[in-house]
Image (cartoon, rainbow, N blue to C red):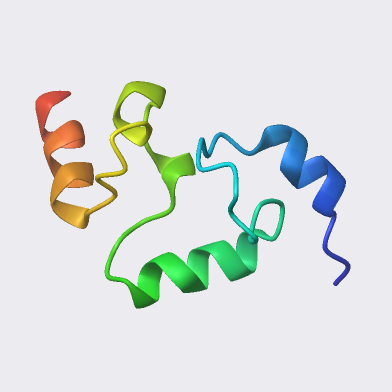
Length: 66
């Protein structure tokens, strides 16, 4: 499967600009899972900017929606 880096970069919501994984979703996901966190793209913008990408933060966001 071919990685569509340009398209991925256009849709990437990560605000960490020097990130070498921008547009490389599989690398990004692997990196964050190895760090016991989720990538910024699964969070709303106001949370993504805090760089708290923990599973606990993700669960709190979704628990608040119920």
